[in-house]
Amino acid sequence: MQVNDGDRFHRAIAAIDTANADDPETLLLKGEVVPKEQTHAEMALRWVERLRPDASEALKLAARAHHVRRWERPRADYPAGRQGYLRWRRDLQVFHAETAAAILRTCDYDEETIARVGMIIRKQGLGRDPEVQALEDALSLVFMETQLHAFRPTQEEDTVIDILRKTWRKMSPAAREAALSFDFDPEDRRLIEAAIGS
Image (cartoon, rainbow, N blue to C red; front, top):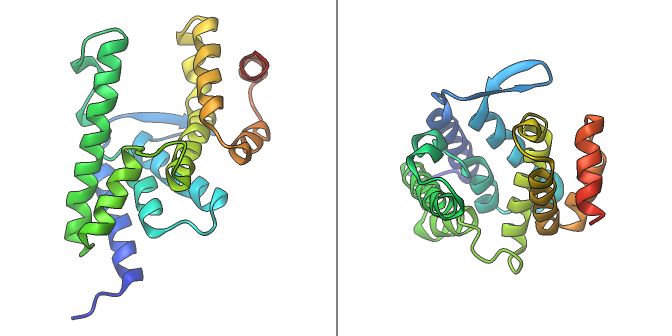
């Protein structure tokens, strides 16, 4: 039986969404409580499609699966501090790539496509690979849209500015332009302007 690529893609998206369906974490978005990873996955894919209308199937799949079942690897399982954080992030990238690979195999994807999705999720080639850059842009925009406002009060102002500065440096000019069009809370915008002006 021949596999229809469009059907396969839609089956994969549905399978990724099913894998994210029991996320216990939520976020408040436009006055509505929504499942965190499912919402982030949908938004990341929309941003990828907006920034790169020619996005490959592998990039779209990576965007939808970039944090698949993230709650299964909580930050609290790792030591406090920068080294623990970096180890957690590295382990997460491997976990997400492996989880995505298992899902894609059930949807009849070839190993070359699965490997490419994993490379994009692990951000291999950031700064050199336009598709990895597109995912980085999408994730940065989703952070600014959905997490910055709640994150800001939990940290010292200098820490937030530093994080925003690092985020901004990783973003493409098109993503920066998109971010500046957001209707930010005035305090969020002030910190963004401080970050990009420093």
